[in-house]
Amino acid sequence: MRELTIPALQKNLDDVFAFMDPDLKAGNCPDDIRTMLQVAVEEIFVNIAHYAYAPATGDAKISSELIREGEDCSLKMTFADGGKPYNPLAREDPDITLSAEERQIGGLGVYIVKEYMDETAYEYRDGQNVLTIVKKLSGKT
Image (cartoon, rainbow, N blue to C red):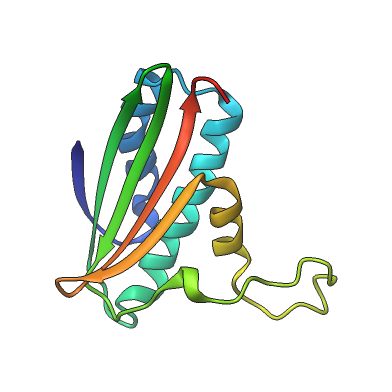
């Protein structure tokens, strides 16, 4: 498992992408799955940057782990911040049958994370919000 602690600022998103890249390469991640992971990671990191410590700033601790089980390969990423306790997975999913004008603002990004990832989990542990995502990169389906 590799770890990165970085100021939770939107301008650091490219550094987060660069951090996850070695595991994507090692797992022979297909482009479509890479895109899903980048969308999910962007949503999570930008939400931490904008809301976790608002109006102040703080750090995000990110871990990345390539998990191999037989022919299967998955990427597990964990995002931790010391901001206000908030479980984004508990929020009700937006009604995507409504038009953009009819839908309430917010929640669509987290919904996409839940839809794109194979596993999502949240816990508040030791004064930290801890959000974990897992995405299968390769193997038998």
